[in-house]
Length: 454
Image 1 (cartoon, rainbow, N blue to C red):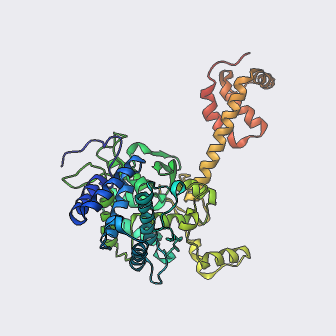
Image 2: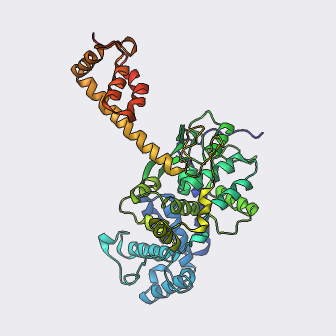
C-alpha cells in the first residue's frame, strides 16, 4: 500500500488555486502586450491589498484574459464604443438563446465594470467613485433560473449513483452525504474527521462555509458515512481530511475539487445518468426536496443563507404539480398515483420494515426521515434548555428543594440516599412535566450528587 500522508494541517487547497494562478499568469504574459500585462499585474496587486481571496483573483484574471482576447486594443485605449462592442460580444457568447442575461454573462460584465472602474478612477468600489463614462451604461440584470425540475437529481438517481460506486466506501459515503446535506462544494470537501458526530438520530456534520459555521443533520446517509469512517486509514486523527485521495501517488491527500468532479462524472457514466451533474446540482436538488417540509427560516439555517439572501427563491424549484398536490390534499382528494405513499418504510439503520405512516422505527427507535430527525433535534434542545433553567433555579434556591423534601418525607422514601438529582426528577413527575422527567433522571442526578439536607 502507498505511504499515508498525514493530516493536511490548518487548511486544504481543494482547488489547487496556486497552480491555477501560475497557469493563468503564464497565459497572460505570453498572449498580452507588456502594457496590458503590467495593468493586470497592478490590478491583481490591488485585489490582494483589499483582501480578496485567491479564488476571486483567479476568476477576475480569467475573465479579463478572455475579454482581452476579444479586442485588438490595449485597455488604456478602449473607448465607449469599444466597450459597447465588447459587451455585445459577451451577450452573444454567454447570453441564452433569446439573448437574455445568464449567470456567465452577468459575471463577465460585472468583472468588466469593476476592473475598468479601478483602471479609470482608482477604486473598485462604486460607492467611492461611481462609474467612468465607458462602462456607466452597462446594466447587470438578474438571470432567470434555467434549472428545470426534471434536471435535478431525484431519489432514483441517488440510488443508481450509490449502486455505481460498487465496493468503494469513500465514493458511496461522499455521494450519499452530499445528496442529503446539500452542502456547498467547498464545505463538504473541507470536512475533517473531527467534524462528524454520531448520535441516536444519525449524524451531524459541522461545516464552515462562506456565511460561517453551522451543523447539518444527517439521517439516511449515516450508515454509509459510518462505514467509510470505520475504514478510513487515518480514522484516529480528528484533524485528518474526511475525504482523501486513494490513488497510489496521492494516497491520503485531501480530495480536491477536480478530483471530486471527476469521481462524480465517472459514477454518472456507470449509472447511465445523462443529466448534467456537478457538485452544485446536489445542493439544488436537496434544497428543492427539503423545501416541501422546512420553513423558510429553517431552510436558511440548514443551508447557511443570511436573512437578506435571496437564495431560497434561487434554489427552490417548485412546479405546478406541487401546488396542485397541496390543493387536492387540502380538500381530502387522494390521487391514484399517490398509492406509492402506502409502501412500507425501511429503517436505514436496522433495515426493519415499518408502516408507511411511521416516523420512527418500531425496532430501534431511530427517525425514518430527515423531517422527524430535525423535529427531534429541536425537541431535545428545548428539553435541555428547560433542564438548564431548572437546575439554575434549584441551585439558587435550596429552600425550595428543602420544601419538596419535606413533602416527600411524609411518605416512605422512594429514592435512594436522598439524592437531589433523583428528587428533582420525582418533583418534575409530580408537577406534570412528563416530557422532561426522563431527561431529569439521566442528567440531573449527575449535577447534584451531594446528600440532601435532612
